[in-house]
Length: 258
Image (cartoon, rainbow, N blue to C red; front, side, top):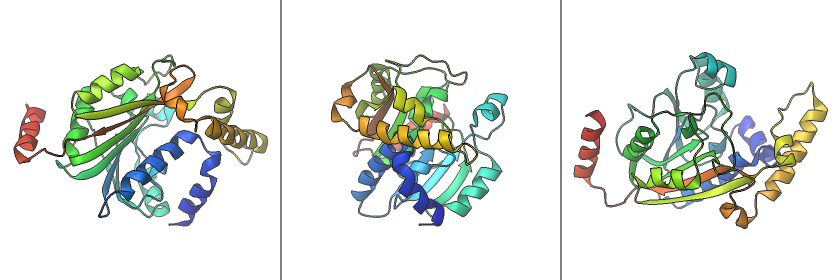
């Protein structure tokens, strides 16, 4: 790993715990693979949760164009692509792509991850359908999104916040196997942890570290996965049917372009 990656792994317990949770799940998935897997991160930009994952990582995102994207620091830019290539060792490609109408090949990836992205997508069913298409048979989709059973939608770029039932229904529409859990406890420590780090604001940075460390311990309880109230995220896994054959793939492609 490069210097940036080593530093990130060391300080990860002091960062917001969602990314760490995703990275640990990705690590467990990759360990089960006989060969080095191909991993796609949709909407990841900097893709911190794939740091240290022994996989060929492709990152895709929409180009940063709109005023809302600029304001909320969303989307991919040439500058981000250049910086990430210098800082990361396992990124094989960083591409501009729209997962609702993706140009990526069919059955190309062992795993697709998408962290806090689906709530930004108007045509969410097309997004999930395309994820299904680009996954290999038996491949896994791992995603997170705000918990609509608890959090009100106040973000100007969020199209919706899913309830657990709604997200499960959407994933099962395309995947034969899906699981949705609640994750990351809210409250005082969680809000402290979301404060930005800055060398000009050492007290704020220290409080953010403390908040994230405590929030990490709070969010590690196994009972949290069934606790709707007080949790801020949904984390879901869905597996593509392993019995998909070439004819099914062709049918999916025909439906996609029709």
